[in-house]
Image 1 (tube, rainbow, N blue to C red):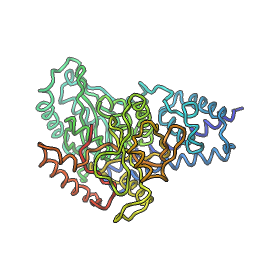
Image 2: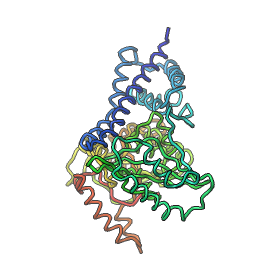
Image 3: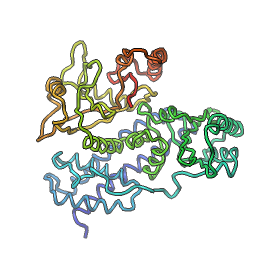
Image 4: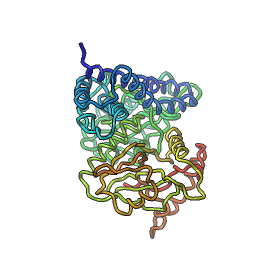
Length: 469
């Protein structure tokens, strides 16, 4: 006979398993959509996948409410539920995602005073190191032993798409030529030089990316091979992307999410973290479409940073907007944005309209020009870390969005995004070496957004600036 705690844990995990099953069904369809040039369906699938999570959480909560009396929070019961849930995750392939799902269910059901590690997964419980699927997450190749040309050919044939290469020999020659010309001269090749290739293709928009890295002793050489459909029954390799900035931009917060078919997402994330050390777990989980896990990882990182820093939250530099109050922690590379209670003339909009625009940007192809955001409800900040000027700004601009509990300021709803240096402040600096480049890129950004049907001045969420690192 199962206990109530076991049944609640089991029901919650079943809700998560249903979510990830549907998530993977949509994700796996990316291969066929790419092969069939079904770009319209691909765009719709990307939007549909973003909304899945909330639907499954709501379904799980409804199921729990039908089976159990959850009107009052029972502390002893839910501590047992968490323990039983951990037991269920022992052999699970996505334990970190399942923990986040549990958190979502719990925080929707109960008051924030109960949000602590006894009841939810503020910290992860199970190790996800060295996880792997039945099929290895990546495969190693040895070009110094088997020859570079043969290795490149094997890499291109690894994923077995249903379409043939337009000209496989040509693509192999081009890649080998690029490696010999631009990569090998910079290396002192070790005898056990290895190329590691992820066994899942990263699909996004009209491309599929073969992702890998060269491992030369303690040197890591990340690269990507974008595959394009010639729309005539064949595919071809468009380029060899290997410069650090280009690889990093491929996983930028200003890009749409990848479709990556994997039963063990943490294994893929760990591979990419070694390949892209400047990225965080939050960045990588978000880039592969697991933005809820990205939020979890971000929040854990932020709590850790708060504990190990002492600077104060303050009004973000730059011209104040008419719609949002923006603040930041100088030592942390993100900004926090809250919708104002009232909008200064001539701005005419509503809180719901602003939220809709943020959702449009999340759903849209951001073409490398629009920042993705993390959206939080009831975020807590220590009162002693808030500057007097910022608190005055809160009281003036967002009184309906804030409340004080004990020693914490609670903001009911806010957005978080990567901190950018406002373009006007960047251009005000003396002796800017890249003035012409930045000015031309600003103009190009307007063209890029227009091509994606986003027009400057029409969206409050358009962000123009230089990323702060």
